Amino acid sequence: MKLPEDPFILELLPEFLEEWLKDMDTKFPEILKARNADDLYRLGHTLKGSCFQFGLDETAQLGIELMGYARSGDWEKAAALYTPLVNGFKEMKAFLEAEAR
Image 1: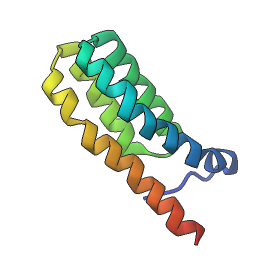
Image 2: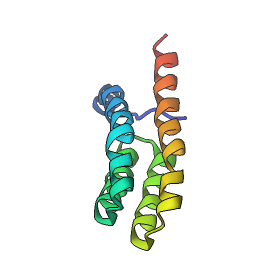
Image 3: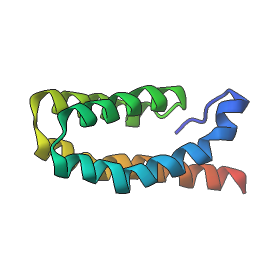
Image 4: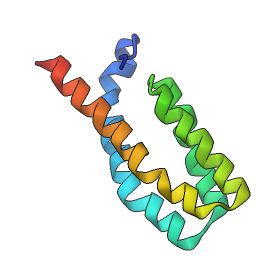
């Protein structure tokens, strides 16, 4: 795992991770339940862009996958990304905490 080199981005990373973990527990299930393809695409697009900016490239790739599932209406595969997405954010959070010690 790599940390962003930009000190400003690095400073914002803990809050970024917390917000995404919260969104994964609230917004993501709501979007799946409503089967709202537009909102799912938007979530995937936001994940992609913001995660690339924060250096979370693997998680950003999952955002790209999510966008594809929104386009194809594959709700089962979209739902299956919940755990890898949450784990990606939790792993980075644990990595940050370990680096701070």
